[in-house]
Length: 304
Ligand SMILES: Nc1ncnc2c1ncn2[C@@H]1O[C@H](COP(=O)(O)OP(=O)(O)O)[C@@H](O)[C@H]1O
Ligand SMILES: [Mg+2]
Image (cartoon, rainbow, N blue to C red):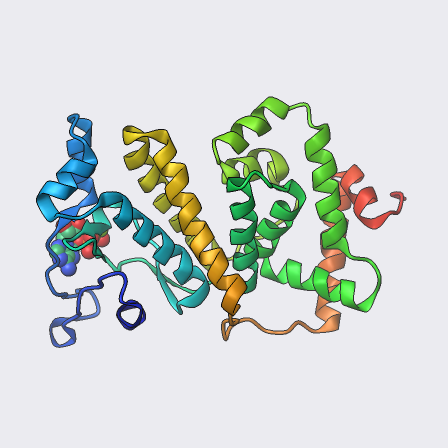
C-alpha cells in the first residue's frame, strides 16, 4: 500500500519497521497531525472545522477530504490491496494538505472484479448528476456483489439471445416506477442513500438472490464507513459540502476509468460455459420462487 500511494504521491502511509515487527505487532513510523476523531470532538463543542484545521495545520480540510475520498475510491479499482477500516480514528490530517492512514489491522485484496466496481462508480455518478437509472444501478450492484452470477448471466447472453441482466434492469426500472413507496424512493435519492435504496427497496429481502463475496463485503463496508465519516463532518458544517465532496471524488475516478480503463485482478477468471449455465439456471429457479413477476419479466416465459 505504501508503494502504491508513494508512487501516486497522494496519501501518506507510515513506514513499517520490519525488524521490530512480529506476527502480532506491527511497528510503524510515528504519524503526527490531527486525528479526525479529535476534530469531530471539537466540532461537537461548536468549533468550525475548517478554522481548526487551518490554525493547527495550515491545511484546507475540504481539500483533504476530497483527496482522501478520491484516493480510497480509486484504490478499489487500481490498487492490489485496500485498507478497509477508514474510520475517523485511523485517518490523520497533516500540514500541506496531506492526509495519512494508520492502522492496517484490516486490509483486503482488491475486489474480485474491478470492472463491476467501475460500473458501480459510473452509476453512482449519475445519481449526483440527476441521471439516476435504477435498473442499471441494480445490475451494477448485482455485478459488484456477486461476480460469479454476473459473469454467468453475461456468458449465457453471449451464447444465446437471452440477456438476463438487460431484462433484469428493465424489470427494476419498471418496478421502481410502479412502486407505491415513491416517497421513500425519492427520499433515498435526494438524500443520496444508494445502499439503503438498494437493500430496502430494489433488493428487498434479497429478492435478487445475491451472494456477497467476502472481499466485496469488506470493500462495501469500508466505502460506507468512509462516506459516513465525510458526512458526519461536513453535514455538521453545511449539508451541501458533503454532496459536493462525494460528487467530486466519484467524478474524478469515473473520468480516469473512462480515459484509461481498468485491468482485471489476477483472481478474476473466465468462467466455463457449463458452470455459467449451472449458475444461471440455479439463479432463475430461485427468482421463480421468490418473485414470480420478476421471473416472468426476465425470461419472457410464464411460470409453469
Ligand atoms: N503510525 C502511527 N503513528 C501515530 N499514532 C499511531 C500510529 N499507529 C497507531 N497509532 C495510535 O494508536 C492507536 C491505535 O492503533 P491502531 O493501529 O489504530 O489500532 P486499533 O486496531 O486498536 O485501532 C491509533 O488510534 C493512534 O492513536
Ligand atoms: Mg485504529
